[in-house]
Image (cartoon, rainbow, N blue to C red; front, side, top):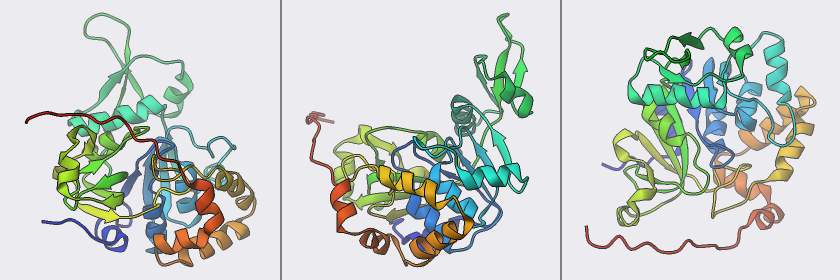
Length: 300
């Protein structure tokens, strides 16, 4: 049965007030379109988990969607602090748990594997151990040094953006791979958004690119340009100017609210958002073709 639906339908069905939401993607393939739809639908009291909150979670925090962040490194990549997130944290209006990058991915691995915890080597991040009681040390049963352990993370919903997917949810991803696979397998529900929906034969022609399989996917959404201002390898570039400008926008709550009104509430969907960005931005983010060499899988 086809799992294709609109972004509005996917969010309405699988994202609820109070849920733990994991929007996956590291630098690349960040599902901004889904985040904007969550804002438009007025979700509240969400626990937003992500290795790097990035602008997507700052926008959701600014819109009043979140009560807690679970993260490793919070910042506007290459620019500086997430001004609003920092303001909310320092004011005590936003709960938080902080881990190292490896700690966050380990939590997802534990969740995906059905384990009660997962061990890691000791690191220099002893301050995190003191600040976060979920990070513990246990004796090595084989007589070595104590190991660090972290609990599993089971998001209520993981959102993964991919280059292409079929109508059943089998998703191809290439370029920088983040925590998409771990987040999807750890979550109770999975929404896949994709730049394009392709025939099942296209997916089957290159099975090694299928990072997320249909057996764990609940909804599939065709969503071109859904990762902007981050990028989708082979489709469009990262909008570095946007990240720089966002730092200026968030200098005041009034300007941030104006941005949300214009660019989230003021457009009905991602296609309208992309058209609103204009031809100059489209041209600036256009990428030249660079196909990989073909692979012959032979008979199977």
